Amino acid sequence: MSRRRAQARRGLALALALSLSSISSIACAARLPPPRQRPQAAAEEGQSPLPDPVHAPISRPRGEVLDLTVPLVDGDGLPLSELRGRVVVLELTATWVASWPETYAFYNRLLAEHAGQLAVVVVTLDNERGALSPEPGTRAPGFTLGWDPQGALAARLQAAALPTVVVLDRAGEIVHAQGGAAEGSTATLELQIREALR
Image 1 (cartoon, rainbow, N blue to C red):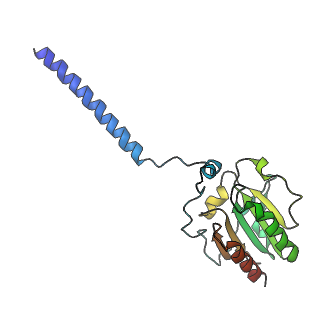
Image 2 (cartoon, rainbow, N blue to C red; image 1 turned 90 degrees about the horizontal axis):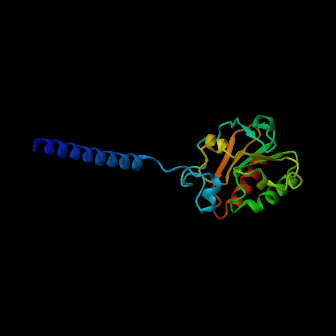
Image 3 (spheres, rainbow, N blue to C red; image 1 turned 180 degrees about the vertical axis):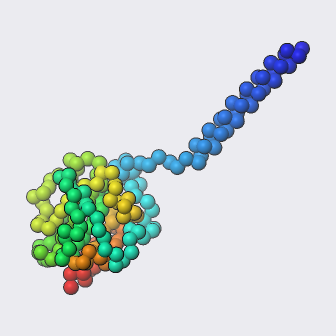
């Protein structure tokens, strides 16, 4: 009889241990953050590939000199300091962003109007290099294409939405930043670029 009781106790202890282990696993899983999606996957599901755009477009304050090296599509890097003396537009975007089809035409027009005074650096976060063609023949002089498939530049700027656009004055200081493509944002951006060019 005592042997049966001992076996029953061992069985009960084992069942209790398994139950506690399951509860612990569920609790741990509940505390884990959801896995990060790659930008392309997020875009295909209609989600923003970057954090909620309610926050400021970037974490850098207006007036700060932005001193970064931008990864280029050909594998080189472009230090923004090399563009001093010109107004610089730095845009983080991707080919799946709704505003992408107008990107080249918009910047090519501004570069034609302000030749030698304006530099445009568009950095895409696409996973695949092939998504960026055709180029460079479609880009005006002064239009540089960057490629940041890992999102390192976006993370460094703590960009809150795509597209995120930063305008730098001739000294490299941030004079404007905007995130997302809300109605009227293109007109606002053009106004800010023209203001910086004065």
